[in-house]
Structures are given as structure tokens and as C-alpha cells.
Image 1 (tube, protein in one colour):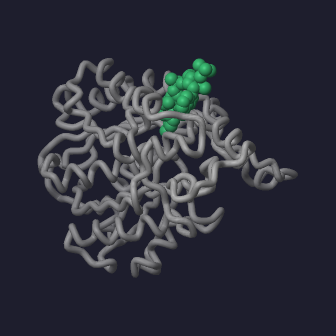
Image 2 (cartoon, rainbow, N blue to C red; image 1 turned 45 degrees about the horizontal axis):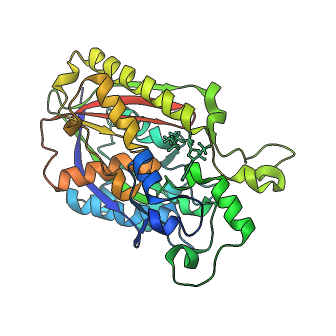
Length: 349
Ligand code: COA
């Protein structure tokens, strides 16, 4: 059976970074609270008028360049986002066209923060088919489109204006999630490998829609209330933060133990735990429960916040470029997100 190998990676973080102090201009929050509860210090936001495919494009170009490949070398695009450019079509076909891959099949995943894990499992299966040698896996998010504040000049402090009492109240009511998300894109080119023992060794994936209401944007194609039927609140994120936190801390360690057991390796054999960056406290608790050294679970949440489907490919790119990721290492990707979707993937790179 052929395996897969990581041939190239890229990332793109748009524009300037926005600090916690910037956010305190548009909603009732403060740097200390955000740092202590989440580990986040700054994040980037997608520019006005742009969307996920715009952020994805430079990340994909960088991934192709680092793999020494051309757009025509790509046989499939897997696009992960919870903030697609349009209700339809998906963002994968948009980025494919801009990249010069028109005609190449493109599939969007709707598994939110855990989408990269689904992409790795599907890529692994696709690469075992004749004719598919290289797959571009992308994660990109433009959460800024749905932030509960709108006025960038106030956010950036370039005006004396203050938010109206209504705007302040709305943004502050949503401060629990309004401070954690950031925008960006990451891309990974995976390639078929005939080398014995490389590639996806085991997958432990789950989805449970019983908890869907705990983290969702309710608006959609519901008959009689299309896109929320005019209720602006239903187009914003609804998040029971504490419950999501508890579930993530409970389910992620179990998943990592299960994936290692399936592959016949010990948790301590894993070189890197490349975890979704939702909250530093979640990842610290997962490390503690697994009894692993925190240094084996790298973090960049401080700089980027939670970029949902983009966190894992951005981190992979950083680690590949600074030399932490090396051929032959055993890595475990793990994530928990809306749906709930969660799990882990063990890869020998
Ligand atoms: N700034 C200042 N205060 C805030 C705040 C903010 N941005 N957000 C909430 N608070 C306040 C609350 O109003 C509450 O105040 P009160 O005690 O006076 O009522 C207090 O802080 C505690 O709120 P709570 O929501 O219980 O905080 P928390 O410790 O659970 O932290 C999250 C909130 C969102 C950071 C945390 O629950 C979390 O990260 N959950 C997981 C979410 C997640 O991972 N989502 C993405 C999954 S992919």
C-alpha cells in the first residue's frame, strides 16, 4: 500500500496583527483576561472585501514553491474552512481557478476546526487510487466577516470616534468568542510515497451532532427562516465556551490514546503533537492528562489566535521551515471543533 509524505507547506497571515488592546476599543474586554483565559496576545484579520480563497491563494503558492511543484502537478484540492467565500460554490474551486488548477477536482470540508484531520484521512485514501499522486490540502478562514464589531477605524485607533452604545453592547455580548478567532491560511502538499512505513499510520475520527447547538452559526437554508430569517443574532457564533472546553479536554486525550493503540505505538513514541490552537489552556490540560512534555505540543496561539481550520497547516508550515519537523518523525495531529467533530491522525512523515 502506498503511503503519503509532506512535499511542501505554506502559510499566509493577512495584514497587521491586532492586539488584545485593540479589541478593548470595540468591546468590553482587557488584555489580562484574554491572555490568562486563552493564551492569545494578537491575531490577524482578513482585509475588507476579501475572503478565505484570497487568503488561501498565497499559502497554496508558497506550498507549491516549497515542494518544487507547478499547479499542473496537483491532482486534487481539499479545502477546509468554516467561513467559505460563498454559500455556494465552495472555496476549493475558487482557489483552484486562481491558482491555475482549473479542471482539477476540488472538495470543501465542513468539519470546522477538525477539518484537517478529515482531509488527511481522505487524502490518504485518494492517494491509493491510480492517477492521483499529489493533493493540495488547504485550511483558510476569514472570521473577520462575522465579528460582532464592524468599525475597523475604531479597532485600529485611527479615529477619535467611539462605538455607539448599541454597537458596544452587541460586541460585548459576544465577547466570549469575539476575542478568540483570528484569520489566516495554511496549505500542505501531500504526495504519494512508496516508502514502507511512511504516511498515515492510524486515524481516530469522531462526529456527534447531539452537541451541535453548543458551537454553531444557526442561520442556514432552513425553510421559512432562510439565513436566519432576518434575525441578525442567528448569523453570529453561538458558543457555550465552558462546555466546549470540558468536552475538548475530555475527548482529545482519549482519541490520542486510541490512535496510538491502533498503530501499535506508545504515546511517548510520538515526536510532535500538532494540536488545533483553540485555547492554550485546553492544550495544557491535554498534555497533562496524557502525561506528555508540553514542549512536544508546540503552540502559536499567542500570535494568531484560533484560526479554526487553518491552525494545523499554519503550525506545520512554521515547524517545517524552522527545522523542527524532520523526515522519519512520528507526528500526531489532533483537533476538536464544532459539530462536534474531533479526533487525531498519526503520521510518519
Ligand atoms: N473579556 C473579558 N471578560 C470576559 C470575556 C472577555 N473576552 N469573555 C467572557 N468574559 C467574562 C464573562 O462575562 C464571565 O463574567 P462573569 O463571571 O462576571 O459572568 C467570565 O468572564 C467567565 O466567563 P466564561 O465564559 O465562563 O469564561 P471561560 O473561563 O470559560 O473562558 C472561553 C471563555 C471562551 C475562553 C473558554 O470557555 C474557551 O476557550 N472555551 C472553548 C472554546 C473553544 O475552544 N472554541 C473553539 C472550538 S474550535
